[in-house]
Image 1 (cartoon, rainbow, N blue to C red):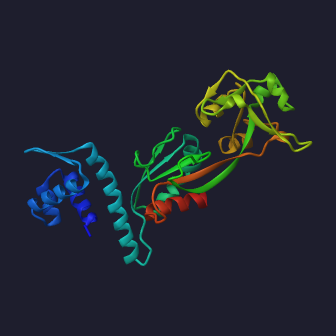
Image 2: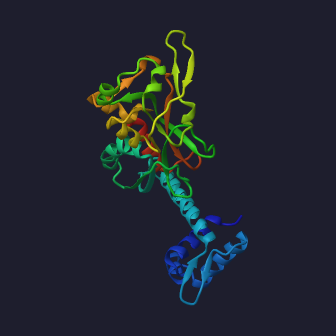
Image 3: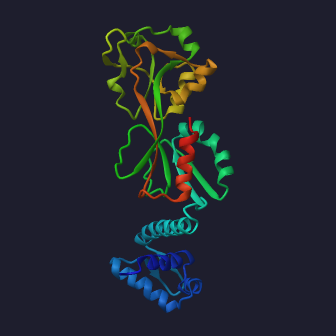
Length: 298
């Protein structure tokens, strides 16, 4: 059986050091042996990974992809060996790349980072906040925190939270335009909506008298693509908003926003997951982060 992990290691050293000689010295192999191993790897894959000149080595596009995957696999091998030799108690360490939406990141994750790094000082945390749905593998993220239904079944996920959606308004808006008492009253109110959801279908409600659910079309002159923006517009008194309560619970508790039409709340929820690529075994640093969030995020 081919030693594919060994080939990956040789290629990764050459790609990182940009030199057969330097890679050979680090691996205690001759430059010619290193070159033969890389050539054998390219022949087996049927593609060129490196462009060689007399003065430099450059990765091809295929080489960039192979290097990124090879580094992940080699890191997992090292982590596995550490776990085995340490009786399953490997210390979480190394780079950890995390992606999250702006709202979840600012409200739920960033405040927990000091405690997390105090527990795991050998982890090097790299966190990116964006409301775009990223390609976890393509963006080299170890963990993504996603709100709402999961679309990619090839990814693994762990549920962290589930939160109700609520309709809210600022006291100033209510003072100026009145408090809706039934969903039909929304015809006379400005409703702030999201431009990435089928908002033309409206907002769901439940009739408290008979328990049946229905959707009420809503209209307004403002749309946005993320929760923090809709929250800010609502706080500014520009309309009613229907959002996950993790966006606005502190505002409700502070009296900056008030719940609207709670008797008609449909009770639907937003799910929040930690999503990651890989197998059932996780690197210690990834598992530590997900376990930490699951125990602390609220």
